Image (cartoon, rainbow, N blue to C red):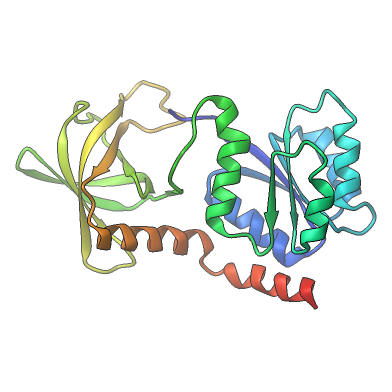
Length: 249
């Protein structure tokens, strides 16, 4: 269920956008390598062997399309490539190459998530339908008429992973109350779909249980989706907006 953190190289000449993507991808759980031009990107590709490369089409020294041509000429390249640009014509120029995806700036979080699923997780044999964030916060769990205060590990629209030395068995029905943005708790009904014991790969994933949310009300879905997107983009969204204005001007 868990995977080794994948490495993503992002190359862009705009430092604000580069910072935005670096922070966002780290919050999504990836290792991130940053490059400010195409020459630096090629050096880091050979040195770091990333799982995915994201290239801005227009960069000084060596543009993204030239990097793309160079990489695609090497049949040994073990990674996928995603092209990015605020200029539709630049993206169109790169479409003749075998790219994994194309992203137009400013990059919406949902589109980035979809591209990552197609380029990284789908080749591994699974995809994640929902955005996921690390969530090291206390939650209230009600099961069998008893309430426990436990720490969560990660959170998505579809469910939550909760740390517990002795997890509830698979198929256990329970309720989870989550405090979103310091407001009153939002309660979700759920069912345990996966458990990890104390000595099962302890150093990668702590013991606990994955809970799938069920019969979630529309208002709770909206609250949870808003919280997750705000968590991912908090204090950095303006950086991407500034880049977009700069590119257009």
